[in-house]
Image 1 (tube, rainbow, N blue to C red):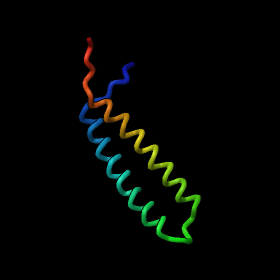
Image 2 (image 1 turned 180 degrees about the vertical axis):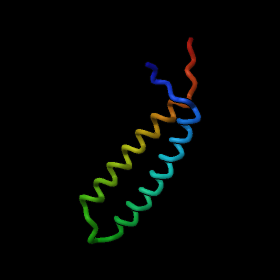
Image 3 (image 1 turned 30 degrees about the vertical axis):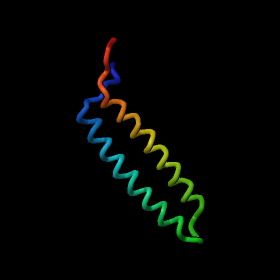
Length: 69
């Protein structure tokens, strides 16, 4: 079983992740402006944003062609 991912699938997933990351960033910024925000929720959102960043990095790496030297 191969861990290869179709470039079109990787590119599509990367776009989805970038949109979610951007939306989450905006939500975090808005929530951080509120003095009475739920700190636990804010922390969870930031953790999710970091996970999205890791996933984006993974899919970006799948779009780089393997070069056998």
